[in-house]
Amino acid sequence: MTLEVDAVDADASGFEPVWHKGRRVGFVASAGYGYTIGKSVALTLLGDEFAGEGTALWVHIVGVERPARIIPASPYDPEGRRCGNEEFWPWSMTL
Image (cartoon, rainbow, N blue to C red; front, side):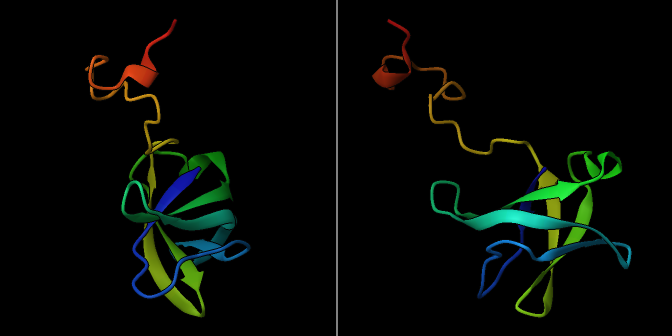
């Protein structure tokens, strides 16, 4: 699952625990600041019961609990499909 983390001064980097209602439910596999989307994101290993978009979780980053939520698997759109203007984004066209 992909998380958006409300990180203030430090981003997750990997192996941080993920919590739900005081119970450890998984961990961060990889994370960092997404410069393209302007947010801290984390790829996590969680049970299916937490897969719903918007599920509220917490991530421990440098000993501080940070709020996080499940977001769509790919918040970045490298092919420009969301923009809907292939003339403006020529590299998104299929040749």
